[in-house]
Image (cartoon, one colour):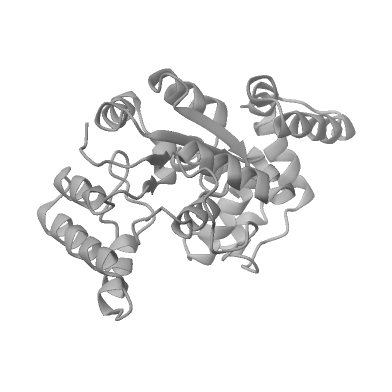
Length: 288
């Protein structure tokens, strides 16, 4: 167990509302969130180029709170010392009596050993999985990679290129919510893990925010930003061509159907949409 560890650990999914969750927690009374969102302690690289760039930006800021400035020192020491747990313990020792969390979508890719380490070190944390329609979630992730110049817009316009990209482990391991839920829920016992849908955030952000806050130990907390706040609104997003869309629905057909059975709720609407798409095409290859 990590003394003073995180109260909330969000295990993904990428492009399913983890940024929204982080922002809501960061602006909630009674909470403090590390100013670097994705700590990646249990899966991934805490000291990635992106996080180190963010660290340098924080060092230059003059308006940081004392707690945030202390985090910068702790994280900087961790970057110099390598990936051990001292910086992680030090980070959450800063929270004092406040609720705090680790929002790292990379945890969706964690293997059994990494999950066991997380649950062993943070047995009292509340684990949150944010869900989104598999095709729309993946498309959003691919568009993000175009914005980061990791892919080109031309890649997304060609169904064969998209198929090759989606087959990469980076995307395969992130894309199947039912598998992510199965492996994490098997390790987290006693009601310590729950899921919510991004589609419900869009439709009823107040209710979903309040439910998650209560789960995190912040029942009734005031939040200093609107419940539908989205700092990424207006970012470039490619239109999905019909042949690409059909390919992705075929690829994720079995996953969508299993999600409807496992999660219910919005996932049943995913299944209805899938049936409409594949019914129109007359094809269902079920290549999940």
